[in-house]
Amino acid sequence: DAKTTQPPSMDCAEGRAANLPCNHSTISGNEYVYWYRQIHSQGPQYIIHGLKNNETNEMASLIITEDRKSSTLILPHATLRDTAVYYCIVSGGNKLVFGAGTILRVKS
Amino acid sequence: GAVVSQHPSRVICKSGTSVKIECRSLDFQATTMFWYRQFPKQSLMLMATSNEGSKATYEQGVEKDKFLINHASLTLSTLTVTSAHPEDSSFYICSARGAPGNEEKLFFGSGTQLSVL
Image (cartoon, rainbow over all chains, first blue to last red; front, side):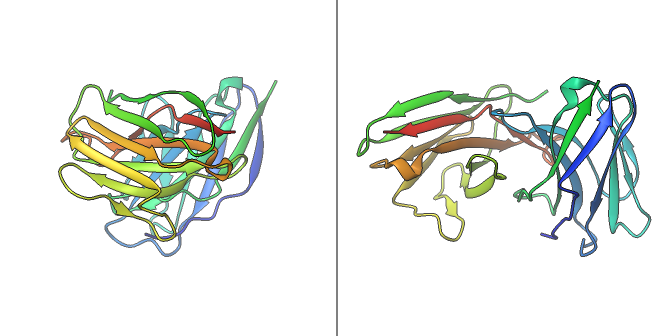
């Protein structure tokens, strides 16, 4: 599975959009981009995933570049409860291998 | 949505004892489950892939005799930490692949905090 690169941490003001970037330049054609988040001492929570089209659900939007080498997770109106570690994972659909993720701190 | 239940949420045991952790898919059948461990301030590390009715596949460096995995039914996988030692203290998390229609997603349990004294 392709590796991903994420910034180690980001801050976001409450109520503003949080845009979390992820680079996956070695992604192959059949690999999906997944986003999960983990709040302290809990299991990871699924957020969204996509192959090549942009995706949106009740939690977030996923923007994937045309060449698929990078993506951005957008939380449209961040709240304090969105403070968590966000993981961007690329996978062909079998196992998920987690990287270091991005610590998102939402501040009031 | 799919729910994965993990039990117990926390366990404290003496060194040398064995501990069993259960992972259940509550509203779907999971032919494949995964076990991870996580040390403080670190990311999740995949330990093994558990397939119903067959032997688990362990990641490199994970001792299969130390971490016994049994996936005897389509809704239950168990991880047994045998002869636990303090260095086995960690957060253990299971996940299950979703049912048809959701099979691209993995759903995670809430984790088990193991403390070995």
